[in-house]
Structures are given as C-alpha cells and as structure tokens.
Amino acid sequence: MHRIRTTTVALLSTVALTMGAAPLAAHADKPDREPCAKQEAQVQKAEDALARVTAVFAQQKEHVADARQDVKHADNRSERAEAVAALHAAKVKKEKVAKAKKAQQMRLAKANERLAACETADSGTTS
Image 1 (tube, one colour):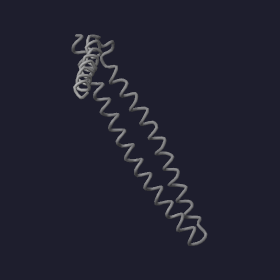
Image 2 (cartoon, rainbow, N blue to C red; image 1 turned 180 degrees about the vertical axis):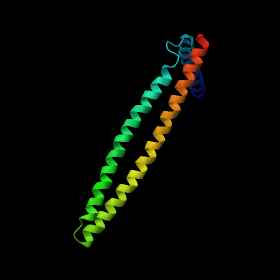
Image 3 (tube, rainbow, N blue to C red; image 1 turned 135 degrees about the vertical axis):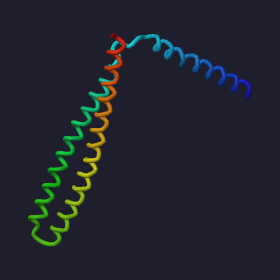
Image 4 (tube, rainbow, N blue to C red; image 1 turned 90 degrees about the vertical axis):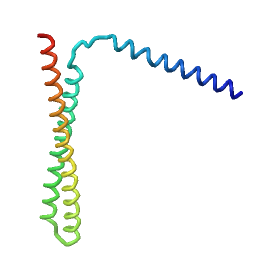
C-alpha cells in the first residue's frame, strides 16, 4: 500500500511539473505588443491610489477642524475632555494618512522613473 502511494505521488508531481512548465514556455515565445505597457499600468494604478489617499487626507483634515471647533465650543469639563480626546484621535489618524500619502507619492515617483527608463531604453533600441 505504501509503495502504491509513493509511486502515485511521484507520478502526479512529475505530471504537475511538466504541465506547469508548458504555459511558461508558451508565454515566453510571445513578444511584447507594447514594451512599456506594464510600467504605464503601474503609473496609472499609482495615480489612482494617490487620488484615493488624497481624498482621505482631505477628509481627515476636515475631521481635525471639526474636532477643534468642538473643543472650542465645549460647555463643561466632561464635554471638553471628550472633545480633546476626539481631537487627539483625529490628529493621530491625520498623521497616519499623511504618511500613507507621502509613501504613495514616492511610489508614483518610482513608477514614473521606471516608465521613463523603459521609454528611453525602447527609443534607444528602435533608433
């Protein structure tokens, strides 16, 4: 029983490895239709992500401004304490989103650099 199981596993793994390599070889034969398409897609994706993060950052700035107004218009100690705590939480979230925005700006810059490098390399090979 053990010998049959071992043989079956070896056979199945050999078939899986053979079948797994076939699509890779077929894909390698296809030439790129557009050499910098991947980089262009990455730039577009990074720009979309930056737009989303920028919208979230603007929303967080509004939350901080609202929290400041709540602190300013608090009537008693307990309301003021709650408003100060909410302001602190809003500031922390704003700082976190600001870091994410900066990181996304750096990703976009890197994607643009890769696209420019690809375009210059492509224009150098076609000349």
